Length: 463
Ligand code: NAP
Image 1 (cartoon, rainbow, N blue to C red):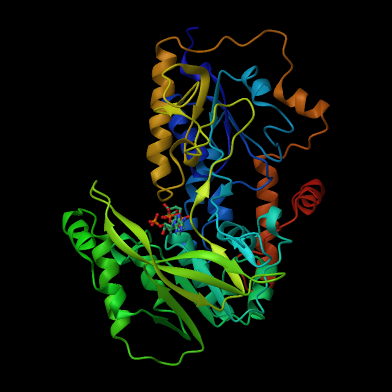
Image 2 (image 1 turned 180 degrees about the vertical axis):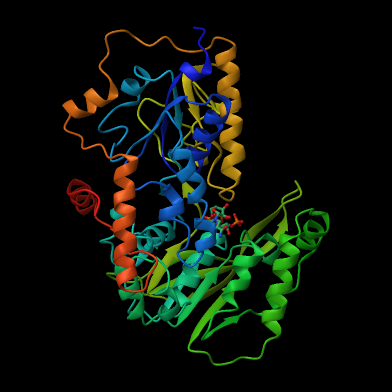
């Protein structure tokens, strides 16, 4: 069907960075285009609200751009709508010419080791969602009476988790960290945080500013074994061939830490490079972790892989956070590649299955569910723009599904089902309420972490 882009009806699922950047790219190409941005929560912004660390407020200021996108004519926020439960993908496809899925990577990857299911073993992503006040995790309990904790993985999420565990709560109190988390962290007895990285410093996934922050925390010393910084031949070769300067800068930071005299600070972050967890032990709950020492070797493709040795060690930890990556989930009615955890696509246009070139009319993806859980917020702008470029090329080629006639509107459908749909104005009511509550206790905001309470505040109207 041939249609001018400004006459398209588009629904975007997921109001994180990819969703907003997809909306922006569509608005730039077709001012006034009708976009419904659907999210399961009355609060928008995905991982900017529920993932970015509360002590990194500058990163969160990207929401000012999203606010502007939301004021464009034709834009609506349909909050508190669960796609897959309140409305199916098929029902959306009958009501919108184009559906752009930006629902991210909702779950986490497991280690697959014995004892992983014991109490006290958690996904780092749950801890992140908890301290950021995500309603699904507000009631989760983390046993912070434990003295020693392990964080597995050395990406930026591991950095965030280690820092939030180590940072004085007097400093965190100036952030929008969820109040339940602030109280729990204030009573925390955690004194030693083991960061367990399966490969060496050259392969560490974290970025240098995030790594460096760990060494700047008040009352915290970072312990690095200088022997871990002696590079094997494969890592030397990899470092020499890299264009990315991040690993070399990480090494500088680590070498400086290794040369610091011990201070006896009350909290310690201990880095274990070339080490993998092989088992968690304990009766009812985690009482220890066995790690095996790895040696590194070339993988023959320019990379370096970890190979376990016979050398094992026990860490006396009572709490474990696996921080080994997020993972995408399948959505009924949408092709999904279980192996990679993404929706198979060609430049954002969903294909029938991985490896296929047969596209699904009107179905697109952007963000982590398109390319996997990597990159910073800005990466999603490029990713979403790429998807929208493809979408518009398809529109220009006449590849637009014809919508069936006589179908009720999305508003009617959701009303019939008793779904309380919340709007952008409703979010602004919540935003104002959160900021007012925060001001009363000298904090930027006090997050509302219960959906029912959000709906009650919205029903009461703006203060
Ligand atoms: P990530 O950067 O992919 O790091 C995952 C870590 O887990 C790596 O160290 C990886 O080691 C390790 N790992 C994977 N499987 C493992 C296993 N089976 N056993 C032991 N270790 C394993 O993922 P992330 O930390 O979840 O972050 C996701 C994305 O969000 C990243 O792009 C990150 O930069 C971004 N992010 C950015 C910020 C920020 O900018 N401040 C904050 C948070 C997150 P290998 O390298 O050996 O695979």
